Image (cartoon, rainbow, N blue to C red; front, side):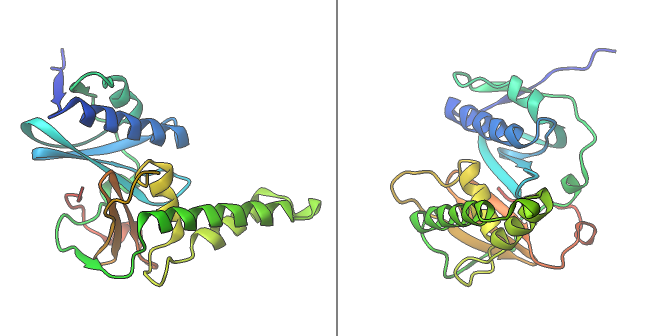
Amino acid sequence: MTVPVRSLEFADPREAADLAAFLGRLLHYDRAAAVRMQAGGGALAVFGRPPSFEVLAIRAARLAVPDDFDLTVSAGELLESLGESTDAGVIPAPVTGPPWTGVLPPRGGWHELPGLPGPVSLRTAVTAAVAEFRSRDEALPEERRTRAERDRIGREIWSRTLAGTGLPLRAVHAAQSLGFLRPAPDFPVALLAAGSWLRLRTPFGSIAVRGAGSGLGTLAVTVGAG
């Protein structure tokens, strides 16, 4: 039986190019990555989970033609269907997603929290944390230079919260690594909260993370926020 091909038409070629760049960064951390795609009206939200950061990354795009779907696909296959000079792609066949695809941030109920530094300060905090990790790693004696010890140092550093906001540094690190904190003139960033979720929002994408003590099985599946 022939499966009909479903196209994905973007409002602007830059939307496809930005989504392709996001998928490429996800695949850098996990060559077998899956993404959950949710479309409603003229908007598309694509969710990924780079394993190195333990966060959800969200990239939104505008669609040329309103659509409505919710499915999980291979990030690699979706990337293959996109080109930087095109405004269209093909939606790959659905796949069985990993557990995180069933637990997404809520669509509504978000409110802004105060105290988040600007993007320059956020990038500075990540740079300082990376430098601290390298310094502590280099100072380890040979007998303690193990993966477990390095992971312990990394968890200690990246679990620290930023400027009393409750946002862990790993969320900021993920935002920078995925291209959401760009070395450009100042742009608006915001920290939002909804229930046990925190979301770092920039014009280029969002990073969502759940608060301490929140297990994957405790949240109902909901339409995610872009």
